Length: 200
Length: 133
View 1 (tube, rainbow over the protein chains, first blue to last red):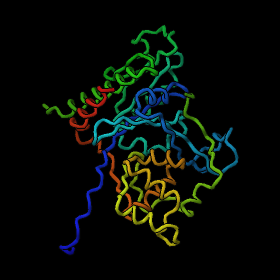
View 2 (cartoon, each protein chain N blue to C red):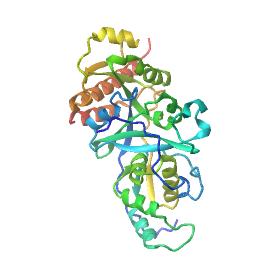
View 3 (cartoon, one colour):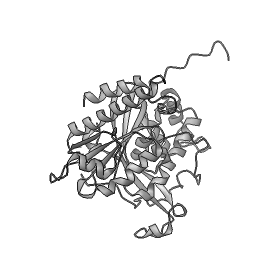
View 4 (cartoon, rainbow over the protein chains, first blue to last red):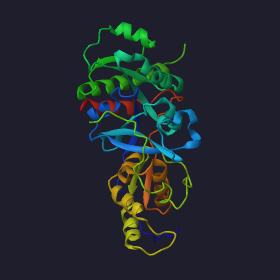
């Protein structure tokens, strides 16, 4: 390289990014939670899905095009000048999850939102995180305010590991969203501490 | 806000890969949804000034929009949302600009769990940021 070459001007420093996933059944409030803590209104992005990659039985209601799209909503929290947290709502229909490898890769952890009236709709999300070894916390959305089950009953119904944090609240509230994210970070710190502990 | 997610229909009237001249995958597939992109101002100014001359390095309108958007660092997902294009199409366009030296890409922070959990310094920083919410 020629010694006289001018030094290129330093580019503006880009922040690094990490990602947290928001999962749960259809209509359980994923986008609402993203919106409650995001510094921007939730954005929507789409991925193409080719017909070949979808089971034929699943195409009811999809028109005759060869490609269709699956959407996901996301938001962002700027932690500091060098760090941004992106929050991604996972597609609610489990049949689309196979294509979201990119979504899982590099995820710090997840939040599973459950609705006490239909807890079964969150089973798939819990399985999803457990099977991929992604730490998560569970949010019991009490938005409808007629939850008659105790936290212990809910925990038993969801078959949650005892160390998985579970919080009850209203996902429309920013403070609840913040508490969920903090609970997840604390959970990750606990897991790191356990793994860092010397053996024997 | 409408609750929520599922919207299987594409509003676009253009076949999705027209914009990429038929290419369906980027040359290098190392972009993720949260890879952060920043426009290289000096180089981008020159490229944008080349105008509409034809040639392999010619910028399409979508390329120009990306260079403008990424003057403020933006993630792949944000660029896709800004262009209203699918992520896979957006990645091809971004790859064009990266290979021409017009965009810088910063990979996401590693959160590899195999090597003893997430970095505590990173978690502490995230925690501090969240407490201000």
